[in-house]
Image (cartoon, rainbow, N blue to C red):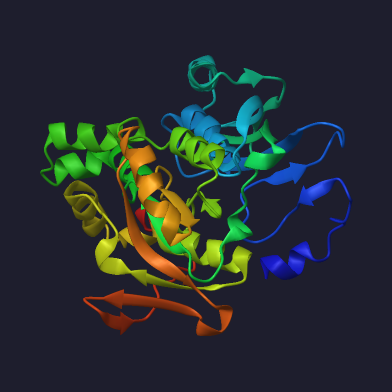
Length: 328
């Protein structure tokens, strides 16, 4: 449906090198034909998280720029606060989170909008971020080719684990969860963290990847489908190779969530020629980032395949992100 809706929009312009396509993370604009720099732009709302929502908004947008190879430069947040319980403390906290996150990434807040409105029941931050990338370093989600290997940096679901621990803390404590464990899970936001800026930019600048993608809503499984759809390819994944921490597994199981369909920021999807994989792994290992091969890119006619212990199983798909079960 999204693909059909996008086709109804005016998206044709010679300066728009990468426009709205299912599976692509950001727009790429050739704003100066004589320059080596391309403008990269992204917008994204944060609607699931309330605690640390400003931090989420900045880093999610930065991730989507980074997977194109772009360095984030400017941020414009739209902050919507609920009329029922908005106060100065809430506004101050959110603005503080945005400021701290932007400073950590070297990003400038260039503008935005804020209001109190009865149309939202909890804070919403919708961010637009601008960055730049050298033409030679530009990467897109749709760059995969059959024969490429599918790589995953990090584990899943880092973002989902933190949200579960933060949003459902009272319930989990009442169910007997240990405070130390919940604090560790909540801190997944920062360690291992939801940012993939460093490994994504390093891979793009080294010219070792054919495509990158930031799996977010819909989890890793949806992110893999989006990458394949953007590339107009098929894909085969080895579900045994996808790392899920024991803590993440237990938290998801408490609420009946499948980790593969739960908010997955903090993981980086990439594809590369087999000849480049060892060099890529060495690059990421030198940054303290673990990576593994989780599949391969197939010709489009071979479709989407998944395997457990070498046996083919249905490819995991999710109509909505599993995190929504927390409030259903």
